[in-house]
Length: 405
Ligand SMILES: Nc1ncnc2c1ncn2[C@@H]1O[C@H](COP(=O)(O)OP(=O)(O)OP(=O)(O)O)[C@@H](O)[C@H]1O
Image (cartoon, rainbow, N blue to C red; front, side):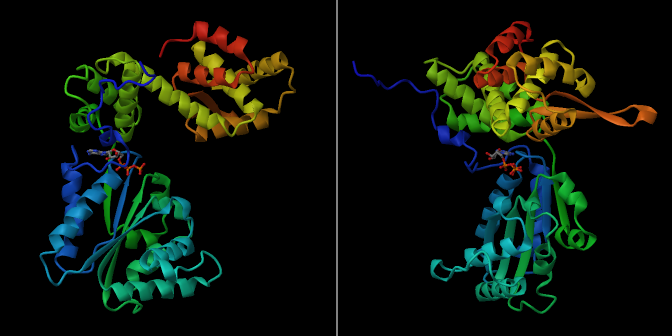
């Protein structure tokens, strides 16, 4: 027999569990879709669109809802001769100024032969080019700026573009902005004039609860997974884990996908609860590994010290307890320890990467201090630390005492 033989697959259509899959219907978002529909209504009525700001945590369906509704809007507008709708979708994840977004929009609207360079023009010239391109399209133009928070405070475009018509820069075109963000600080920091303009209609998407995630997972699983290849407690477990952690549909769907892959690799008949638990640990371990990638050996030792406290049920832990343990590990590896201040920096990096969580405590007259705990399961941190290979004996010892999460 050859090396490869076809196996009975767990999946019917695996792509339905991929992040970029566009679902035919959105589950558990009726209220938000109704509010979003109302906010888009002026487009169908032939008026200047509202500017819409959509915000909510990651994975709660902001992009999916936007794509779903805008494709319905585009289809429904075709029946009205006096509505000529164009939609431009820009992901701002690499665009961190108004200038860069304007250049990107010009290039998006122009054909391949007329692209402009991303540097070298005065900002006003790029805005003029953008207005020219918009004028040449005419009609209603909805510009979707996803991950808009990357623009930071250089946010003129969020004010200028929606007002370009009333300021006389545009005549035959009605522009509307849809900004999407999962960064709550960005929304709070918007200057009043940008807030007034961009947040004309503000829509908040809240995290999903376990019931809503079950509904979403069932609709995806129906397409993606073979009928009898899913134990009945799998969807409730994926939903419960994601609801407790983030309330993100992305997290729940990814967990199901990875559990399915593990079941396939095991040649199992069906996805079982154990596959979900293993998948969770694999995903969390990858998250820690990703967070550790940028760190030096001291970053690894700092994480090792927090993890050691976690295995003893001594987290959240503060610097004064953490630092001696970190120093002992340095001695063990025969490396010179870094200062408390530098250890703080590493703790900050690990917090940014969501590997650690930080709690601020009040010590009365002596001011505030921070305590740290793992934001990932202890076993995931230990697996990732084991892969570093420099302190196998310590990790093995900690694994013996670690709680099985
Ligand atoms: N209500 C829903 N019904 C079906 N699928 C959903 C729903 N909400 C989210 N999803 C799916 O979950 C995944 C993440 O959703 P989406 O990309 O829309 O999140 P987001 O809020 O835009 O996140 P981010 O802020 O990270 O961009 C996608 O695969 C999407 O299809």
